[in-house]
Image (cartoon, rainbow over the protein chains, first blue to last red):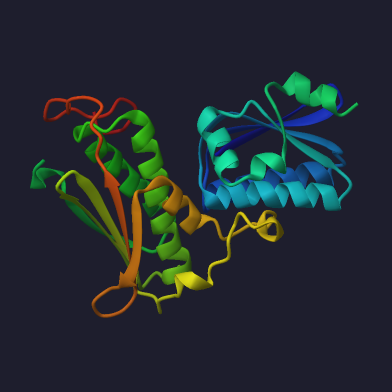
Length: 112
Length: 157
């Protein structure tokens, strides 16, 4: 999985591309979130638009990213979920845990 | 449906090898005429079975292998994934939907398999190790493509 970091509207946006799966994919997500928070980010958005597959380890890493953010005084939100990723979050009932938005602009606006 | 769709793979216990199975699996599912949605969810379930075998069964021991078999039983797709580990009791797995478990980072693999396949069964491989059997009815939404066709986007064109 590829991760690109950018800033927009006071938020740190991580553009995720590819598979969030056991091994390299989950590690890439973990490192990207931890790096952003260590650099001082308090508003983090995961842009999921180009995520093709997420397995149970990837979902677990999303949960860890969420709890890590909370524990370190940051907020983490999800934007642009592909339908199959959204299906996974519904099935696992994590859709009730995460703050999910249809666009990154809506996610940015939600921080204020 | 004929034996031409069956395959058997023996893999080293490395997560990268999951992708090898996915290439063969996707190609097989396309040739069976399975629609895109069904292919995706079977792909996800099989990925979980192999990941469990590598991580929990074989503890990523490079000396141990994961064994993957795909066959057809009537209109059912049957996928078996075996490891060479000590075995486990699936009854010990927690419910990932219980409120107290929602924020646990692990323990959703079997739930994935149950959600996306019609049946899941755990047993023991001859000689030891866990053997998980996944079944999915093949509802062919389309006629299988001509022999030799490869799914667009795979490397097998």
